[in-house]
Length: 359
Image (cartoon, rainbow, N blue to C red; front, side, top):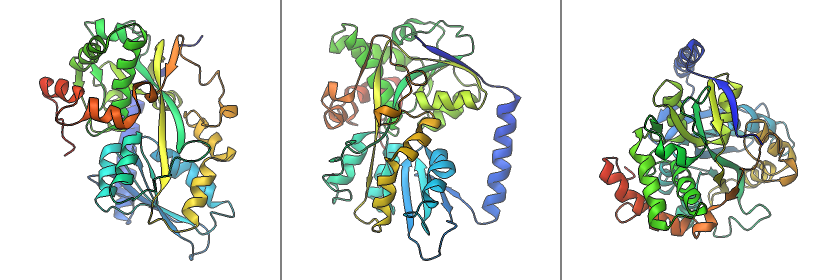
């Protein structure tokens, strides 16, 4: 069994990387490159194919940005279907991105953290077709699990969510659940783990409260939360497994723990009603093909194609893996836990002084 993996963190390397990134960003901006907006970072990439190809707008949650721009899109552009296609991207907190598209932000393909963010676009003017998830992989692009990222050597001895709740020294970073889909996965992982261990619903909510009481910061997105942790804020981060694997590859000084019970993260993807045909559909179809799924796996995401899941790279939790269907699916979870006025988590966050509105 493998519960923790060791990486490096919080050194001069991180600071230098951040400085270099800033310099590159300034240079690119000066040359007319990408920019930032309130809904997330945006960038444009030109294809090496013919100038007559379609431009696809990918709007997604924050963490897979580099996978799209550095791996998936360049690989697709080399296929016959991708010849001449170019991309214009926007990545940010999942809830913010979903609301932006609902408000009119152009999008050909949307890739969110939670199903409720996709359902918003189905319900508001059918910006996404009602049957978006009626395919072999149920509209899911990738999978992951919620893990606990700690400092190298795991000095607090955190091995489970219960350990985290009981630790007097834990300073937790997790995004705000009213902007970030990853935060909602984190909370449901804590809640569901308690239920699996035999807790009542009320007791499980109390466990969620204990964890949220330990948060020293709740950034807007999963990527912002990871950045805050990498820069030295807090000593425990609740995050996607793929973010932890990314940290390993970048040499940060951390370990990640897969709790005995945790939740299976499934991120939905779909084309929009305004998507140019047939290129958007072709790109979405290609994302489920073996080449693309292997690229996801190389970047720490669990493929939806089970034959591509390496159990050594992506081990199962010691006791069990549950999914959001255990709690009735995202529509029910959104209403019961994350309704901004009456949700159980909204009440906890309000009591703790954190914002509970989508802004």
